[in-house]
Length: 391
Picture (tube, rainbow, N blue to C red):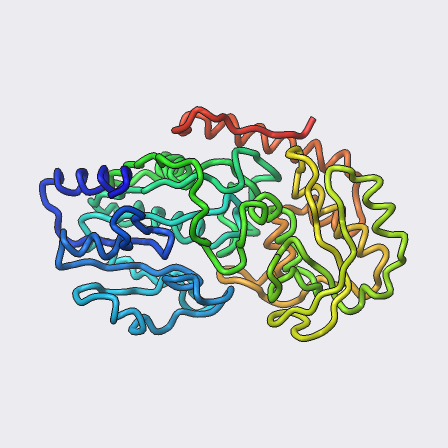
């Protein structure tokens, strides 16, 4: 059994009353020594095990925003396990009923995050912690921590509450640098509650052995996700339906984009290269249509993905009349369109719409990034500090 799980089982064994156990997890929670999933290992400790399944399903078999309304498909995995969806209808994404949480003695959180606030695993975990704090439930939360796949770099502005949704928790910057365990410790300091919270630090720096979700194929995807995910708010394909989502993007209408656009953009933004290509998404936006676009190739570790992608979108919108923001509600808890929820800041939105100076926006992001670094410093578990590359 790997070191983290040995420590986890030791903590559970030493609790005075084990009782019902809950596990918020997916396929990433796998023991490479025993060749078993954590939910299989936990069956030996309790007859009351509830597995809370997040967006994308237990095995990341579902695409984005697919409702998990039937967990009976997992029943073959073992008797005595109650599989419960925590990704429900568009009106109420978090499917955990408060009383289910209050009935638990221990809640284990073992899920791989990607370090960007748009990722719904983050919102799911913080929603659960907030709910437990409001219930003042007397239970034990144990977080089996994982490395932040986007690293310790911080990007963007802290989300204003008016832009909160299931793809944005209030107060969190676009790219936050903390591990999920550290973020849980920070959140408990804010929300309080009668529960205990313990974090089991990771003992393996490279945890990308199992994809956390279907459109995160590599660590490089995580490094650019804070910026490239904004393309979800446009009528361009963000590369879903290709083998390199978020790195590849485009649309049929970009065929009319001036040939010199990419050359000019690459010259003024040397930290990465936009390489022209054509692609055909097999699903999602522009499914089965020939798209003209680009693949983003980072050249430097000092890439500020958010700043870079904001510049892409602002420039493309000025050069292509067909590029539009998607309209209508996009995610739970908000009626705002996708681009507003993803940007999460009026100054960022103004910049995307061709208003405001980049220098002023960079100064704002720099201030927010440093404020976040300072306020979360007491909750760091690992020696690597958070940092901002904005100067």
